[in-house]
Structure formats: structure tokens, C-alpha cells
Amino acid sequence: MAKTTEAEIRSVLSTITAPGGGNLVERGMIQGLVLRDGHVGFSIEVDPAQGVQLEPLRKAAEAAVMALPGILSVTAVLTAHRGAAAQPQRPAAAPAPGQRPAGNKALVPGVKHIIAVASGKGGVGKSTTATNLALALTTLGLKVGLLDADIYGPSQPRLMGLSGRPESRDGKTLEPKQSFGVKVMSMGFLIEEDTPMIWRGPMVMSAITQLLREVNWGELDILVCDLPPGTGDAQLTMAQSVPLSGAVIVSTPQDIALLDAKKGLNMFRKVDVPVLGLIENMSYFCCPNCGHRTDIFAHGGAKREAEKFGVDFLGEIPLDIVIRETSDAGKPIVASEPTSAHALAYAEIARKVWQKLDSTPQRSAPRIVLQ
Ligand code: ADP
Image (cartoon, rainbow, N blue to C red):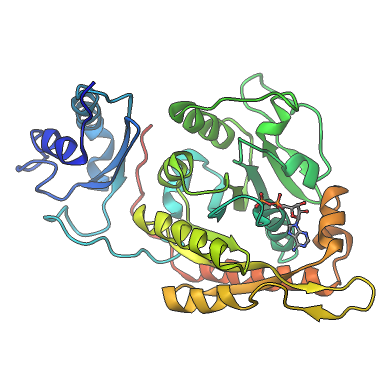
């Protein structure tokens, strides 16, 4: 079957009339267009005051793209535009951290901020960092949730020492589980362990949306979202569809990982999610016997890269067997050894993250996300 190109998608979208005249493309309303293996995603920036009335426009745009050859799925979302009015094509300005929380309300009403913890590749300690960051945020007196969106390899149940199925009081919404004062939800609670799951694009989104919307999160200051590793389709769709206040990227000092970290950075920039900063994990080695510090990898690479890319460096966590052991035992170091140097390093990172989210005034205009 003939393959549709991005240009053809833009071309068909330019046949749709925009509110107030012109078409969707020339008015610069189509943002973040992604085409991968027949799956298409984009947002339509609209005036927030008109949001709900424009649902037919969204549907028309989806239908027009869906009709193109070889297209398997189309996800279009309406978003409140950032400028005064939809202007002709302009470069996307990087939003400030905390600029998008109003949209969280549409999906999860009581949650002030959703942040993603992401990595360019697997095995760099993203989940371990997400867990300890969530726990460290509670030490600031915040109400914290942890959403394990790593649906391919959910590890939060093990890390947080949780098991069993979540309960539902009303038969509709699931109650998150609680561990060390953090509310936790994970696909790992819902599927059998060792059951391979094959997730296709649209399923991924509906799973994540359910974990956000159909869970009784209650009032939270911050929901930490442990994303699947990498920068593929699933991550991109998620970054685009979950109303994130910001993202934190975890990287090891090895150059190769840093190349991957760059991909992560670019992915969030592409979908206008502010990158709160970079964390260097397994930054140096702490000898468990003598406490001697060895820089096994080129220590400090993440800091240099962060500077080069104009993102903040949030901190470094050493490679220490205690971090692995406490994680494996379901007693993360921030909870089990709160006064240790490593726990304090996580606390410092948490403080920086929260400062960034909390310091930017919330926008009054809602970001509209219609699914
Ligand atoms: P990812 O989510 O990136 O795939 P994980 O958080 O699952 O990575 O970590 C991979 C492995 O590395 C786990 O066994 C974890 O306990 C271990 N690990 C992560 N960070 C550290 C660290 N700073 N020191 C020691 N071991 C770590």
C-alpha cells in the first residue's frame, strides 16, 4: 500500500477551514505532527474560549487524515494555544516549567502537576530514580503519587514493596495502593507477572489514560510518571497526550547513554514539554568496603551535556550497591535510610524539581485536552 507522508497529511489538513477563516495549516494551528509506522498524532491549537465547540473540527481533522492510504490510527487533541490568537506558522517557544498544569485538571482534576521521569534507553536507573524522587518529594511535605507508565516492564510494585490487585470502592475507579506515604498505580498490579503484553499504539494511550483518569488519585501536589525507557512511538505519544508540567531525564555518564539522553531531550522539546533537568545516575562508584570513590565512567558528562543543551543539571547519584539492594528489597533508600548521603542527594534533586514547578505562576487559561 502507498505510504502517506507528513507533507500529504499537512496537505489534507489544509483543506479544513479554521474558525475565523483560512485553513488549519496556514493559520499555524497544527502542532507537533508525528507520523510513525502509519500512526499519526498532532495537536490543534485553538482559542481556549472555543475549546468544546471545536470538537467537530478535531473529529473532521482526524477523519481527513484517517482516510489517507496506509494510516492505521490518528490521534488529534485540541490544545489551548499559547499566543493571543492562532497566528501563521511560528517557531514553537519553549514553555516555562509549570506552564501546563491547568491541563492536568482536564484529565486528573485533583493533581496539580504531572512530571515524567524518562531516559533515552533502558537500564540507566530511571525507575529507581522515579521511586526515590517521589519519596524525596514527600519529605518536602508534598502529597505525591507515582504512576508506573512503564507498561512494558512495570517495576514500581517491586521497588515500592507492593503486590496484589488494587481495590475499587465504586466498581468504576481503582484505588491506588500506598507505600511510604506515596500513592502508587501500576499496570503491574493489573496483569499477571510474566505475562507478555503486546501493546499497540492506541492501546498504550488508552492504558495510560485509564491509569490517570480511572484511578482515585485524590488531591496530589505532584504525580511522578515513570515512562517506558527510550524515545519511540509509545513515549512520544505519551509525552504528547499526558498533560505534563515537565520532564526529568535520567542518564548515566557513558557517552552512548548521553547520546540517548539527547534524543530524550529533543523528544520533549518537540512536543513542547519543558525539560526540568538532567540527573546523572551511576555517576561514580562508591566502594562498599572502604567508601573510596572511583569514577568508572567519564564522570561529569551529564553536567557538561546539560550545560551544552541549556538544561539544568539536577544532581548526581553514585553507583552504590545499597541503592540496588534497597530497591530490590522494596525499601528504597530514601525511605529506609533517610539520613544517608544518597537520600539527601535525592532530596536536593526533589527540592530543585519542586522549586521549578512551584515558582512559575499557573496560567489562568485552561489547556483543553479532548480525547
Ligand atoms: P531503568 O528503569 O532505567 O530500566 P532501573 O531503575 O530498573 O532502570 O535500574 C536498573 C538496575 O540498576 C536495577 O537493578 C537497579 O537496582 C540498579 N540501579 C539503578 N540505579 C542504581 C544506582 N545508583 N546504584 C546501584 N544500582 C542502581
